[in-house]
Image 1 (cartoon, rainbow, N blue to C red):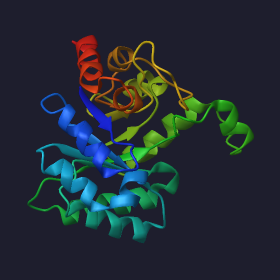
Image 2: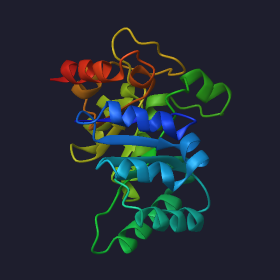
Image 3: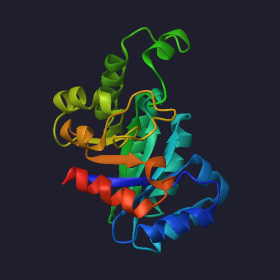
Image 4: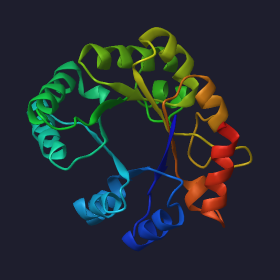
Length: 231
């Protein structure tokens, strides 16, 4: 298991401060759309300069050729992990897989993951607003199966789907879990969440945690407590 701390800040200085506070405790950081839109590859570079790894969370969702070309650019930046959206379909995902394999000959390949259903969505919203009538867990599982068939290394899903995904897709299929909240933390906009310990027990490889650490009065202590709860 590895902890990924989400750098969901509008300012680069805040990211640098948090990374420095967590030095020696955290190896992986998530750069999402807000930070990347504001600072681009500079945000990635400041993480790499500390010797840490980057999860580039842009949820690529476009026509296959555009996603494939974007994947090739990402490969040149020595990213540890990035994602596409499974709702882009099989061809989009498989083209991204081909692009990564071709671009990374002789160098380390980033993990290529598929986003299933956002953890902010409830089953009611999935049905009433998006017109997806299947039960949420069934929809997540089918999207994950499609991702695996397209050659992706794993998926991102809420903690509530971990057990069925691990059972159906095997031990090697990478499961990354946002929506993780330590005991006593505010759920904020997460509709489907569990504690870090529960998520690990159900089979997560990586836990993505943002606000419970970043907004803590003592981020280093908050991180230590999370890691201790998993020991």
